[in-house]
Length: 307
Image 1 (tube, rainbow, N blue to C red):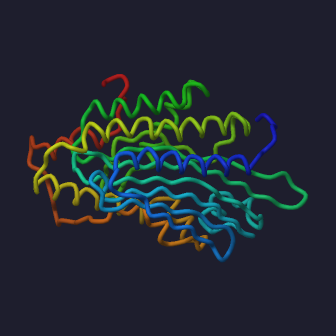
Image 2 (image 1 turned 60 degrees about the horizontal axis):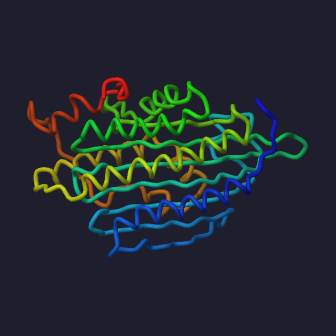
Image 3 (image 1 turned 30 degrees about the horizontal axis):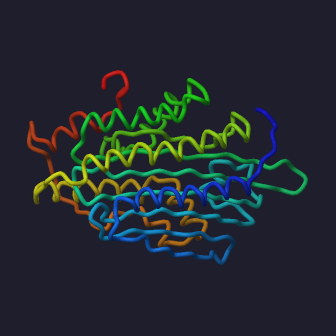
C-alpha cells in the first residue's frame, strides 16, 4: 500500500462541504420547506450537525448528518471486527444521508461516506474509509436502477476496474435481510476498511462516491415525485418501509457503532422513516405491480448488462 501522508483534517473539511452540497441539492426540490439544523456535542468526545427536512412536498423526511466522534477506546462492534485495535484512541467521522420521499413511486435512497483512524503512542496510525450508496424503490423502474448503477460504475472507474464489481457485490450481500430472504432494494455500492489505494487515492475515490450519489438521485426524484398515486400505493410504501426499519435496527453496522459508542440517538436514528407498517402474512397478488418488486427487483443482478 502506498505510504502517503494521512490528513484527517482534510477529510473532515470535505465531509462538512459535502453535507452543505447535498442539503443544497435536496433543498432545491423543496422550495417551501427548509432543513432544521441541529448542532450537537457528544459528552464522551466530538459532536456533529444533524439536518432534517420534514413534511415537505417531495420528502416526508430527509436527513443529512455530519459527525466527528472521538474516544479513548473502540466500541465493542469495532473492536470485535478488528481486535488488534483494542485500546487505541479513535476518530470516526462521516456524512450519512437518508431520504424518504412522500410519493411511493419515488425511491428511498441512502448514502454514507466515512473515515476512521485509530492511534496509539509509538505505533503508526491505522485508518480506513468506508461508505457507498443504495436505492430502495417501492414501485421500481428499470431505467432508474440502470441509471443508479451507471453512476456507481462511474464513481469507481477512475480508481480501478475491479472496484465496481467488488463493491456492487458487497452491497448486494450487505443490504440483505436473511430472515426475509430478500435484498433491501436494488443495491449500489458498499465498501469498508478501504485503504488499498493509499490515502490520497482512497480519499479521491470517496469524493467521487459522495458526488456520484447526489448526481444520480436528484434526476430520479425529479422523474417520480409528481406521479399520481392512491391509497393502495401508499399502503404498500408503508409496508415496505418496515423492511427498512428491520434492516437498520438488526443488521446495520453504523447504527450499532453509533449506539455502542454512545452517540447521539436522535442523529443515529434519523434514518428511520417517519411512518411504517407491518402486516401479518402479506403476499402480493400474482402479476401485480407489487409482485414485480419481489419477483424481479429484490434479487441481485447485473443491471448494466441487462438494462
